[in-house]
Length: 314
Image 1 (cartoon, rainbow, N blue to C red):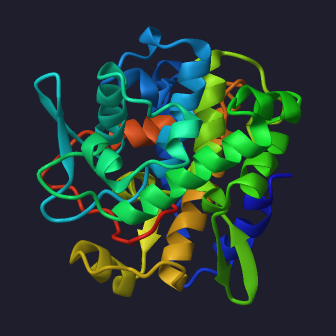
Image 2: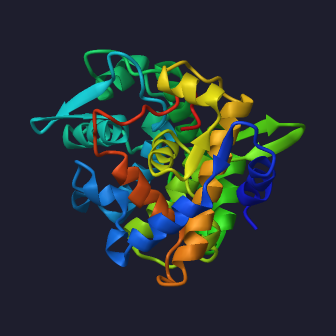
C-alpha cells in the first residue's frame, strides 16, 4: 500500500478543521462521465510532440522538480506565444521557451551547475518567482544526482522500478531529497509526496505505458484541488479555517490546518474513486485529480480563494 494513503487516513479521522461531505461526493459522481477523463498536460501551452521520448521524460522531471508555490501579489506570470500564463502552465511555458531557444535546461550535466543568472533568464517575468533560490538548489541537486546515480538518463529510474509505480515512487523519494514531502501531525509522520506522485502520473499518462500499482498513486494535494473540492461542497472548513482562507491569511506549512486540508483532499478523491468505479471501472485517482485541477483553471470572480502556504511541496 502507498504510505501516503496509510498515513493520511489517520488525519481524516482526527481532523479538527476539515471534514468530507459524502452527500456532495454522491452529487459529483452522478454528474461525472468518462468524457471528463483528460490528462491535464493536454491543455498545456507547450507542444510536447516536438520532443523525443527521452526529452519528454526529462522535461517532466525538470518541471515537476520546480513546479510549486506560485502565489503572490503581483503574481508571477510569463508571456508565451502572445498569451500570459501563470502557475504550472507558466512554468511549462518557461521551460518550453528555453528549449526553443536552444537552452540546455534538459541536460543534467548543465543543471548540476546552473547559475542564478541562467535560471533567472529561464524564469524571466516582471517579478521574481517565489522561492527562486530553492528552485535553483533543487535543479542543481536533480542534475547532480541524475549524473552520479543514473548516468543522466531518467529511463534508468524507470527500468530500475521494473514498471512498478510504487517502486518508482520509492526510488524518487530516496534519491531526490526535495521530493520527500511529509509532515508531523498529532505525533505521527504523515506522507504526501505530491510532486513525486504527479511526476509518476504524468509519465504514465504521457507515455501510455502500463505501470503496476498505478491505481495506488493518490491525488496530489496542492492549492487548487482543495479549492475546487470546497467549491463543490465536498470539503468543509471550520469557521476558523474558513476565515483564514477567505481573508488570504497565510497558513503555515506543517500546521494542523494545512495538514488536514491536504489529507482530506487525498481521501475525498479516494472516496470519489471508489464510487465512480461502479460505472467507470478503469478510473484512478490521477484521472479525478486532473479533472479537478482543470476545473480550478476556470476563473470565476465569485470563487473563494485557495489557501496560502509558502512551501516547495506544492
